[in-house]
Length: 105
Image (cartoon, rainbow, N blue to C red; front, side, top):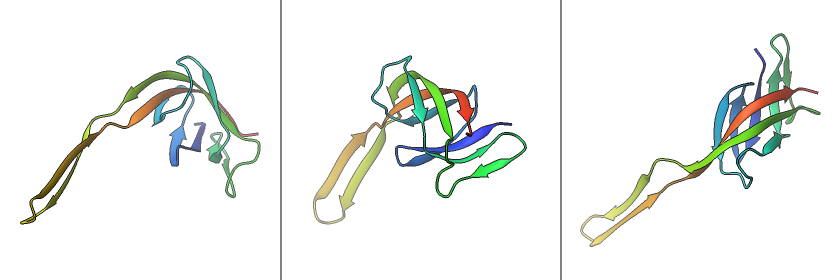
């Protein structure tokens, strides 16, 4: 099974051909091709290529499927007996990317 561990948006994701991953928002149109060059680890089914810190010459290509916002989280700050309470909501933006190809160089 071919897979790669990529880094984007300050987080790490496991990418497999044909799978869709949800990553932090990218500035690109739906249907555009994206390439991830920060491959930390890759496997072609028999050998595992580990980078130090990156695998040289490796890349993962995909296609943007959609953009959206995640579920709302509530941030509530409270101090008892001090008449202090603040409520704030947040929805993180995301991009769904369908992985097309993994090249381990």
